Image (cartoon, rainbow over all chains, first blue to last red; front, side, top):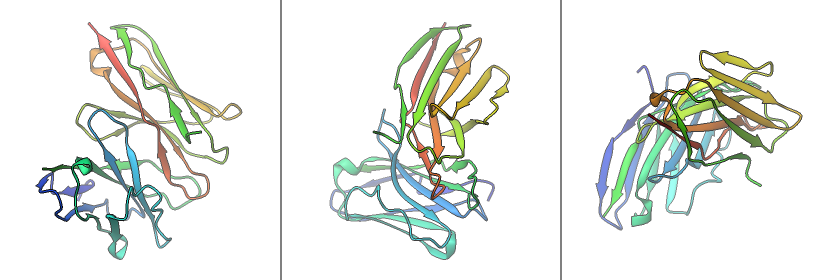
Length: 116
Length: 110
């Protein structure tokens, strides 16, 4: 596709359930990011994938959060046993950075997660 | 110290005003710098890259000061449509990871 695609665009789930959020990056982009943004707040970094390197998971808030990137393309962010404080917009971005000078990141439109 | 710091604002300015935002970064090895714009309830989008020599795009001018490790964005002749959050972005020199500031909110008043 032309841009970063995220699905679903909206997700309402019950507290305690697991959810999976999907990100399809721009073809050929080696770098992929997940961020979380609560209403009126800044971007909260979650995880960064860069090529075949070990992912930077330093932003994951708890062990209920995990992410995979299969085949260097599509990524899935999984939240287990969701809590109300997990409600936010989850944004995915990809970039073609892989050289010494990185290039800009392109964002998907996000998944709005509501835990009730 | 945060890796990228910005004044959160809000900056409330009248139409036609000139407004400037600054951003400081902590990693002296950073090589790539950007300004992003985020409208309410939308995803961030690239506004402009920031080059060592400084660069201009219409009413927008970006400057980089490596010695002091700060980046600036100047907006001239502000329009109502400029109202948004402006995010400063810097790469980690070792991993190329892009690091986003928390943003500066600009509200242009009629």
